[in-house]
Image (cartoon, helix red, strand yellow):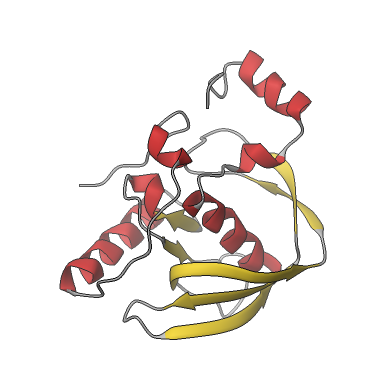
Length: 165
């Protein structure tokens, strides 16, 4: 049984490796990852957040965007980004912390689905934001890395995040 890893766990700072085998074991892992995301009331989850250093992201922004549902992104890579927006973000790996983060509004993403088929699509709005947040996890980046050093120090001083995070 996988469990959410919290800020300070070294796996959250490691760059992931690509998925190469799309087999039944991988399908079972995706099911478990999905169950964890929904159980924890998340809208996105990256494999490192449950201790697996593989390039896998699941996202479900249905509560924010009509017509959306669960999406799986394997080996996602942002090819282009444009625009800019500031939105408050939170993270299952940093409970209780919400801060405004500036990110591009539109991204072009190459990725594979759960069967290994390759795609390139443009995403915007909430889906683009959540994807960027989760893809950051695949690169060892946390959303608090995007806030000002002063705000980050305040969180450290309040003992909301560890000094060496």
